[in-house]
Length: 469
Length: 167
Image (cartoon, rainbow over all chains, first blue to last red; front, top):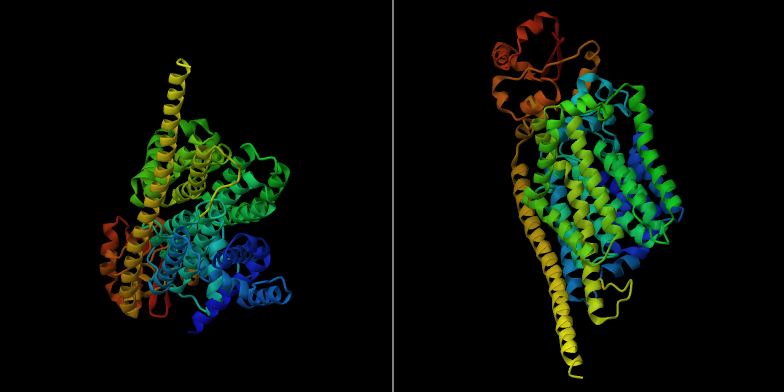
């Protein structure tokens, strides 16, 4: 009971802080439940990144300080939850259309699934190997020591626990442990389950701006609930939250490329920072997203200089402090050294790994029933976009997907581990981001393709007249 | 006039074909998207049922069962390595010794991958150390030689942890 109250208070603090930061923008964008979800994710990222920085300085962020920050955010008046408007947005509209009813049913399904996921995470013992050996271990160390002044983060004996992985989620989990006042291996993974559910709702909220709303809700449900993804959440693995953050960043960057609004850019920058502070491949995906958005043709209203400054700053803040700490403590990537990409002898000696690595990643994307659904949706959306003359966002998706796939193959190419073992332990989860981003953007492609074809039929093609019902 | 009519008819047929192709495209996109959503809904529902069954199963677990989960093999929370840290100076590899029965625990596979090799044993089973040594020996690790090289035994609650220097 006490644990539940403490965790609820902590989650509410994230919502309050996130809403204080993003509420003004999301109020115009999304309905109540989506606004709460985005606020929670934003609050988690802000507090999690702050806790990570403090951990580098040997300081553990206290649960009570988070409550005080939330209180300050509320008192200052930046919090405008507007409960009446929120309640209104939850009410069933009398003139609900069939697609609106479908959207509501699917969003309800996401919420129900999220509740089940959180309960499963809270009740079940920590059985996922990486879940306890990497993330749980680091969270426990941060909880006990406050910061990174522990062999868990520096000793070579812990190298296989990926001492080089960033601290965002261990820091959030340590905060959760401080809230309940003890280490509990059952409760620890509820943080990831709540985050994944909220991020899935946030994806729906952002997708529905430019897609059929029922399709946006359906894809958001798929990202959370498919059998290939959901169990990893209850194993305390961060792959689904990472993929959801990459997806949010990609969708908002795609929106910024089309519309050029500052809110999308700031949102994308925050999620890029979150992805980069979650895992090494998150840094890779985030950097390639920025490169892809920089090199595709921009709309007249999107300012390239603002984009580079904002995203560069966000990525720098997320990556550089952690990288400096790794460098000063002599901690290296336990899987590979980037310098090997420049060593032709090593590349040639290990060239036999390229084909099998690429084939395995493709097999994971197309061969697993769950991911094949998402990948298939992504491919069909992409083809529909090309067939109807959409260029900018499909080019962005193609550059990012191609670049990310090539980077993953390169990582397996120069990996110091036996290829098969390395693929067996990582390939099935590392492709989540590729499948998620393609499926998410396909909703926009399909909606727009259908609108373009329908408008062309009527001979009254007007830009920006896409029906979202 | 007679020359124009066939051309108009051809254009009309072409426009009809285009209309039909567009209609088919739109309907295909909508049907495909709707099917994907329906499949995703069905798959998520099945996954939810599986999770609910897991919740029921896990709710029935006794504390003892939970303690033997991979993350708590042998009764020790394996994320609780912190109490080992004071021993880590100069120890490059360290081992926890498990009773033989625990060798079936899936934790061992993970331990071998993540931490060189870890075995764990309850203090009450110290007299079974030879059994554990024999088991470890099957993995090609000569525990006796390692112990001879200089081992230390620490007690933490009901757990003994044997730290051994790397050979």
